[in-house]
Length: 147
Ligand SMILES: [Ca+2]
Ligand SMILES: [Ca+2]
Image 1: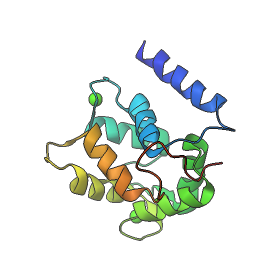
Image 2: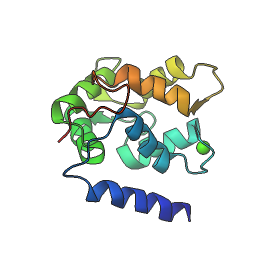
Image 3: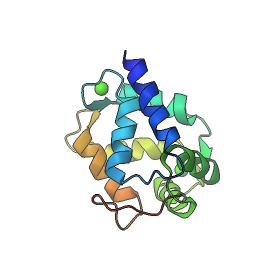
């Protein structure tokens, strides 16, 4: 059943690919839809790690994705404009080695897991996304640069 919901959500996003213009809040909803597999509204580090590995190829200790690989994947999944997605990738690359790896992700987890309980509440994840995603209109319902 969970799988079905995820599939339907993914199909909905794919169908809207030409016109979809997601706010950051909607992107976070989509991420939780696929990553919060036990649907408790919290992204445990296990769930986060599995998603990074399965959906993004970002494995612990691995080479991760180049900025351009991440950008292309992000555009495909979340329909930001290429330049918005690229700027987001550059921001995510917090250690500036031109790759998005688990090192970057772990650093952000350390910063944005505000109560340090080892999991992302949706509030914490929203704070993270609003801080790191570059779009100037990302705070609410306004559309931003998308394709
Ligand atoms: Ca969960
Ligand atoms: Ca990096």
